[in-house]
Length: 94
Image (cartoon, rainbow, N blue to C red; front, top):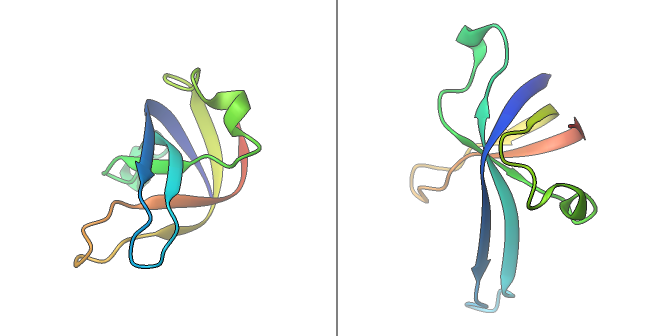
């Protein structure tokens, strides 16, 4: 399924190594679903995690742009962890 996302904000996060897990870093785009018809849109904001190869092309200039994302699955987090949904993609255009 192809969805249309508008980038609202760029979000950079880092976290330390903990309990034997390595430290990490994420470059995410906080997006709003602008797909049509409107009644099929996801109501919450979505995080699109950029891939290493696309980061130099989009990071720092993505806010206000539109992405078309082929969604393979939406990794909806459990209620217990209180994590936000993250989009995992097949392909992007933008």
